Each structure stands twice: as structure tokens, then as C-alpha cells.
Image 1: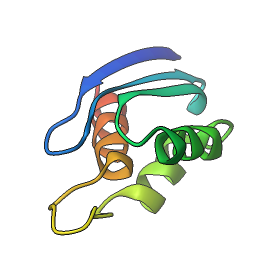
Image 2 (image 1 turned 90 degrees about the vertical axis):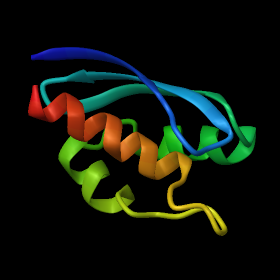
Image 3 (image 1 turned 180 degrees about the vertical axis):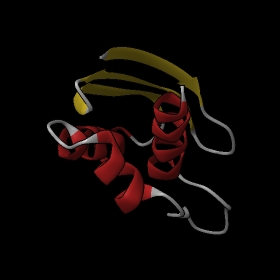
Length: 84
């Protein structure tokens, strides 16, 4: 099963995360906006990881005083895709 996700982030500096999943594995991830080094790092780390593992590791991470973060928004996007 292949999925292409374009998820609009909420409560973060990044505006969107774009993810491709093939057979449950993240093959590509890009953030639009946000802290370039951090978002590139997160995207590189999740490539090759299963979507379930990425959700498990990233869900609930906060950025400073915010209730969410770019990694948390990625986890939400992946969770939504897994539910479909």
C-alpha cells in the first residue's frame, strides 16, 4: 500500500509536512517552513522507518512552551494516514 500525505501543520513554525509511505515504511519526508536544520534532521531520521515506529517515537514531543512540535505534527499526520 502506497500513500502520499500532505498535512497542514498547526501550532508550529513549519506550515506543512509531506510524506510518502510504501508498504508501511516512510520513503520520503519534507517539511515546508520551520527550522531548516531541525526539520531536515527529523525527515532524514524517519526515512526507512516504519510509520508506526515514527509515531511511537515522535508523538507528544513539545517545542518550548507550545503544546506541539514539528515531530509531533509529523506523528499526527502519520497517525491519520494509518487510520485510513
